[in-house]
Length: 462
Length: 140
Image 1 (cartoon, rainbow over the protein chains, first blue to last red):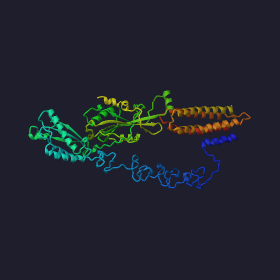
Image 2: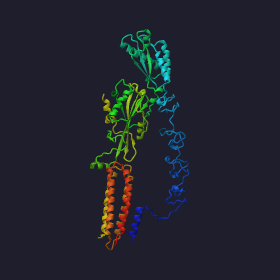
Image 3: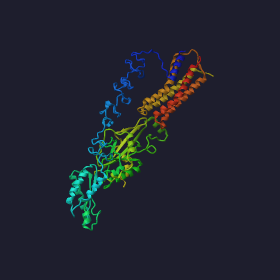
């Protein structure tokens, strides 16, 4: 009989999950919640909160409330977030102003008020446009003005001396260039057809350098100026007349790489520099790209290597002085080699269709982890610095969605001179089977990512 | 035809102890090898939820019944025994398949075990009834 009773009780317990009440309940704090169920048996509280009080009435019991005197949301442990920037006031350096977590909850400063934060602003003290990294854009009117100025820069015959009238014009040119601190220019030197070709070539180069040096002496940064001599190859007037020869002995200034209003369609999103902390950084040697090329030619070389290796989706961003090329996030093996399709471009962890006993046992007893990688090629004449925090996998996926699909000519026409570097920032992530992906701060194959992907090998081919 | 309760009880208990032991050893190996990673609670929660109610019932009966030495031979209806034994066998095979299938399914194992709880709950109800009937319906 005893056994039968026990069996019945156990059955009821196992099937119904009933609780058996053996001890009478007390309610010390008289809040209507029995002590056995009261999470705060010594303090009168609310029935809906298991007998605990909630002084600020924010729906979070005081014992779980980091700010029991101020009403707040549950995601901030009951603390308020006055400016709605998802950072609780107690952790917010600027609780009244909305700002990102990376800046302690304060808005990024924008000294010139051009809506481009100082950290991303190439010209933080001069109002500019977003499409031009916060620097002012040269309007078509100003470009025409510059063109008119440059038409009036002339040299004495067979000399590298400017005519007297040209100096005052050059002064006006330097004033105009100072208004656009991010704009870059090519100074083209030309001669008439008097003398030999080689001599004229040299003379035109020297003439271009003369103008360049004058502008540098008058406060224009040397980085913004490039002098090229064309000799007598590009006349603009008849060399048979004295007037024509005079017109051909000239220097012209051509705008390079600064978008004007006419180029508004070339707006490029900006890649953040300082860049998020990378898993690895690989610098590509200049020999892969050759000399005397433009950034567009560098881009084509990179693009062809990436296309060949299956990276068909890419996104472009502008960076100071150049561009960034972001590849789609790919899944890799632990060795860094991309996994086969269809798993290469999807989040689902690679799954071998092999069902040998060894494979099954391995999958049964070992944790599955997916590895992912995004490569960002930065072609720039600026130094790359990094923030302390790495990006999330979501951020690198966002880059691909946000970036432009091609490189605009305003950037592509820039010359890939000796000051430029091509740097690959490697962002790696690992995703355990049942958890979200997390960044890998130190790669297991330093300096080998572009080798194992085959990109370096393809780049080295002519 | 009848079966003695002692013999039937031993067969049922053996089935449960051996099967539970196998599943426990598999999961212990998975725990040691790191398969469960940060989700030990999910894995062993599934084990406790799927096995412990019926296993503790079998253990309790086994322990209590040993103390209470019968004075006469007790018999049990073969139908009740076969029902309890076959439902137990089927349920334990399903449990074993669920845990072994982690090695062949694409579904992340936490989700796989959570999904299994839905259909295992149905079997568990039937199982409790079948095992309970077997123990209750014995006759002196």
